[in-house]
Image 1 (cartoon, rainbow over the protein chains, first blue to last red):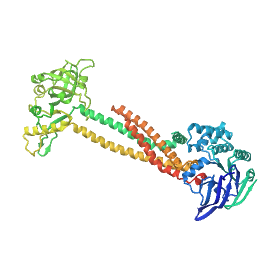
Image 2 (image 1 turned 90 degrees about the vertical axis):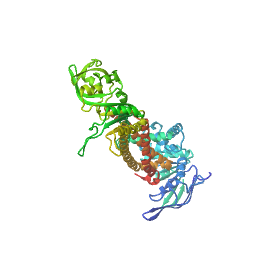
Image 3 (image 1 turned 60 degrees about the vertical axis):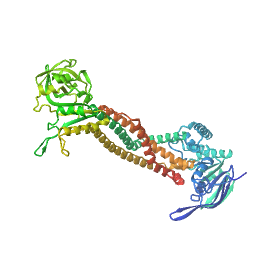
Image 4 (image 1 turned 60 degrees about the horizontal axis):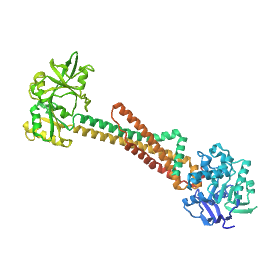
Length: 228
Length: 410
């Protein structure tokens, strides 16, 4: 294996809250290698969401160093972070986060809107991504016409469409029933088999067990790191 | 370009999702732009119509009225003192180089009879150059000639309204016999219809006879040779002030008015009316433009308000877009485009409304109300400008939103 996809070195994140500084992450050291399938686990308030936001360049770190695919991304501008999110990271959220007024196809096209391939290529790639998650026949449906599992599949297609190196999923099964949740986990596992690095945040032990590696956070500290 | 297409399509979809709200928001712009279009086209139509009426009175025409009487401090109006004479008109024709044609008029209201019909009209005693000064073509026959004037012939030229009231439709007026104050006259000509003057008086309700006949046979004036009005035309529009100066100088000299003393006559140029109409028009334009501008500002504030609401409502959407890679600029452009879509759509609807109203007004008043491409272009640009100006603040709010907070927003 070459350079890790994610390398955290002493990453800390503090928030000012009601006049006090809250330490959400305290000096985390972590490496995630290319092609891993990993869960970040821990009780609520443990800092796992903050860790994912930082890994996904949605948030900035207060101290330490973050390297994404060997490149230091600790202190980038807002627009530089937007570009990296767009090209190299795919996001999946607990509440799907699809645009309600856009069809499944348009939702999948969304990241490419900021990446500028032509209309034809955009459409082609969006359809291919929907095909990959088994949603090609629902391309013209609006999110409200789809079940939760179907919406999450569309969200997975959206995360895939710019061929990212890393997919980050924040409680992807949190709003789904057990059976549908398992389907989504299987879908994510199959992405991992194609060589994409998948990191998800969950507090569901069953989901955690399906991963190859689990890290446990508590009070902003890395408590345990176990590989299957 | 296709990105812009997508953004505009999404913006339109957003507007359609809240039809009533969008329409109400656009109403300010619709009314503002509509008002601008109506104002410009109706204003121009009205002005053109006034200018046409004034030039119909006679191109470059000046009128000389006799002065006012003064009895024990009580002053009569213009024309109350009989100071103008036919000789003055002849002198003007001889001695004023800036003057092209001169005529004089004596007038009195009289009952005119033709067969079984009769009509009360204004009878003018005038000269052969009257139609030249007034720039008034003949419909049929000829106007009074100098031969008619010399021999004080019993001949008359009729205005269109008089013909209509004295002769049945289809009956030939030309060569017809009429009686004015029981004196028989032969109709030798009919003037083309000229319509109303700027005061709304029907210019075609008039009958013309030689001034010699008028004073000798119709209304033996107590003061022979006295006329009511001298009308004259300058050689060109540019020479109107020059002609006025020459006439004033000549008449002061002829009437032996001492330097510093008050004139016993007054000269008025018709282009003063035109200038007056222009000035009125300018004031109206300023007034209506400010009303339209206020309406556009109010409309713009409406758009800003709704865009701020929209930005808040769509916090989550903004978060999603930013998460998948929208830069600040992308979000800014999106919301700016939505504001502009709303204002331009308002502008287009306002233009349609304005054109409709202008057409209706033109149809009702008979004014030509030209719909200006300039005005429409201006209105569209203006509404787009309003969109950018009032959309910028909400769009900037959207683009500066905190990503994590936006994603958490319920």
